[in-house]
Image 1 (cartoon, rainbow over the protein chains, first blue to last red):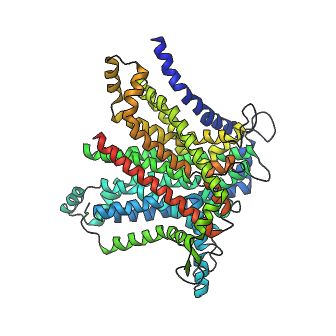
Image 2 (cartoon, rainbow over the protein chains, first blue to last red):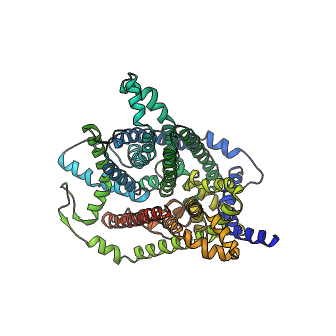
Image 3 (cartoon, chains in turn cyan, yellow):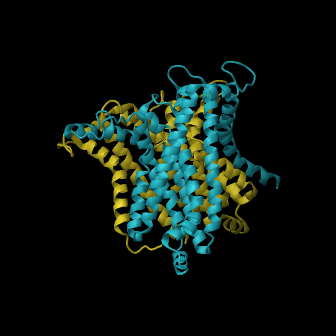
Length: 308
Length: 266
């Protein structure tokens, strides 16, 4: 019995070691780092006070929050409309559409920023073409600015929103609509009193994932504007691995703030997913299918985050 | 919902969406084959020189090789570590599963930049000074693929009813290690391969951690691409498109394998 225990624990040891070394220790080191003044000993909240009172860092936080909220809301809006539209198609077409949007969600990070530079950058194909044709729709448009960033962020938010939302639309069953219309409800009344309340956990949960996704996005912004635009993720990167001066303590502090916001958003998503499961308990077969869907979705999300 | 026929509204809306989503891809593709593309909607003349340039560029080939071996090593390491661990937890200590899930889900919620900060701080000084080395990167990659590996291995174990299989094998007199190697492993292998390939494709596209941890020392394909963006647009397009096609092929293989396994386990 003793030996049995020992060999089981031996099988677990490498896993525990790796997780400790590359997950627990770094997080611990980041937390203690955020509480240490540069070069000093002892613990202090000075970094947090500094981060939250410095106009520069506050601007980075504000910019990140703004771009995340805005790109998430646009992504959510378009995603909702698309998810509804997609349910109107025949299954074969629908699967192809989903596959295409799934495919484009592989196009993220550096290659995506790069494609936009080719298209709309200073010497981009469309920029030059429209200049040639005398169109001035892009006058005053600058890809390497706020509007450009929003444009690229929205691009990677839409497929993700669509993939997260469309399973929820399938939770709305045809019988409910029939029942509602038999009772004299107009389509508008149906959506207001039945459709939207059923969808709302999925909507808020998706919003959480989109927000976290945008907050943590680094590759896209970095490849597009380098250090020139004041975003939280970009700021952290240059504080820790920059070429000029590195301030790992300040970087840790900002990283903790960023992690708190994404953890909160993911927590919101988890709670909403749980509430959603209450709605889709309409039948055993249905639950099984939505369960498989949720698993797949979760895999997708992680892929998104790895690519950004 | 009504799935018979879509009206004009949904049709045109989805068409618009697809154009929007595919436009950057198609444009990058065209750019990779274009010699002149200045004044017209489509390139004026075509060429393959950017692709041939790509394969003659020794730095590109080096970066490709670096990416391949780093990803393969990380995935293999992850398999070696995770297979026994997930097996032991799922079969012998199911009480620890929720704890395990917490650890494994963490990389979902923590963005790459944040993870990089901790890794750099923990390993740039002190007894384990491995900053800028492949060891640090492989460790970081291990954490990145934790969720896929855990989910994949655990699902395969549950779908082949590992506990019953094991009991049967032990009843017939097999020792535990023998039972694991000769009964369990061959049965879960297809599912494990799928998670390994998925992990590989995730790591192949990883940029944030790679650039921050070893960007100055080791060039993977993503870091290389980033460094080429400013130089030749055509060449970088060729690389970006090749990369994209590669990932697409990989996910096609994944899907086919997944379907096959799905059918088998039914």
